[in-house]
Length: 371
Length: 93
Ligand code: SF4
Image (cartoon, rainbow over all chains, first blue to last red; front, side, top):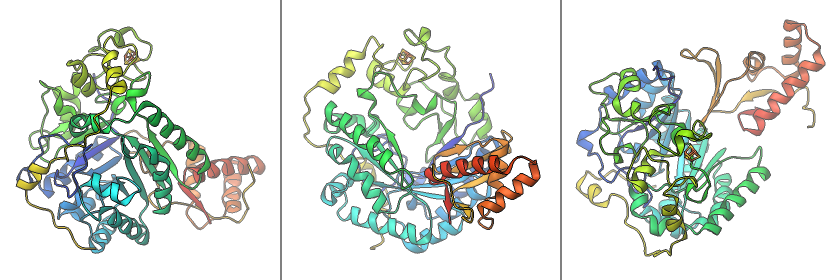
């Protein structure tokens, strides 16, 4: 079977980050700086990605600004013809560096915010003054003339302000905003009790955002990622395993999705040893859940199996203990009661574990220019 | 939908690019998190959205090239531009 060409690639340039959001999608075990791919290897991978059909390249992390060679990486990616999107916390990139990156050919900036309330935002980010610096960063992006997307993760603490996030994005000059409910993998899973909103609040947030979508047509484009735990059917995770996207870790492991390392027994290949074309077509991890042959019942005989691809493999692993199981978020899953227990259960709300503090302390600190 | 003024000049918003897809063939219109695959007629319209030509110049050129009724082309071009403006992919100056 030949896999169709991928559309998008997420390059996790580094796991280093000045923030410590409790829903961070990076793994619990973070790659060290000394293990990160060098500039030349990344640029080769970008060229290979363009050659196999990748269109969008997301430069992410951690905080990609922690890479001193970021402008060179952008130049390499743009030179390969990729559409380059920088996913940043806005902390750690000063104006000269952002200008250099824009000049190197960056197409678009995506800035994360944690809340609209400064104190709450700083508490989630784990860094005092971070929200104000993000506002300054957004202004700088606008002055340089780069298009901006704001993205924010919705959880128990800020769910009532989902609509305010959209207005904040408008006032920050964004053309697009992503309002995404927290995903429960890695740190998010660790902190699920503190992060999961109540059902009514989650649904109300969705209604508010949908209303704003209609009101703000032509002003801002809204992408909303609903909370799959409250839905009847699961999300078509990564639009199907190994169908459209790939993800590269700081040390070069190629994953079908960012949480794939949480599934035991998968064999991931590294760009140091294989061309990207070879990985995409032949690596065991990518072929593990391609197509529908791997599915079990009820997915196997379900009419939706090409619609949602049985949901998320990592969530099946986390909740059912089997990556081939139907995502328990699905109301047809024999284990769906597990999800109802999570969403209907009482919440401690006792606070969370900030992401990766220990690993970060051991690692080299990233420079934080005073703005 | 209200008709667009004849003298507006459409251009792509920054971060929006029309390019040929060397792997899949055809053209794509790229924006953040979006890949649109315009049909061949739309591609011809978009190629003329260079930030210099006005709407009426674009319509004239297409009408001449495809020898189709001008009013029909105008309606198609306006619908396309209004849609892309709502998506914030095109600016009308
Ligand atoms: S049974 Fe499987 S394929 Fe059917 S809706 Fe549920 S997850 Fe999707």
